[in-house]
Length: 57
Image 1 (cartoon, rainbow, N blue to C red):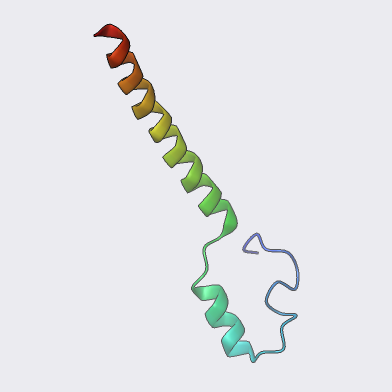
Image 2: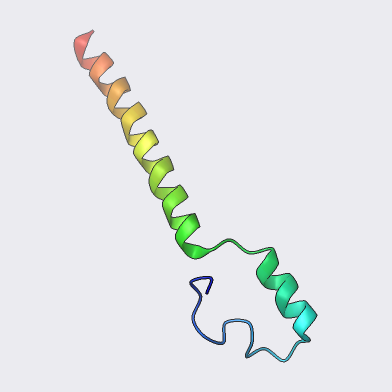
């Protein structure tokens, strides 16, 4: 359901409340990957702008 493999938390020998707490504080892997892609796109755009400015000077 959260994009994690089956048993990621449920196979651990911890109480259900601890399992839910661990999942509740986590980030869905797909969201994290999307955020990294957005940041890299922005970084490359800023770097490209900076390099274009250096070529014009």
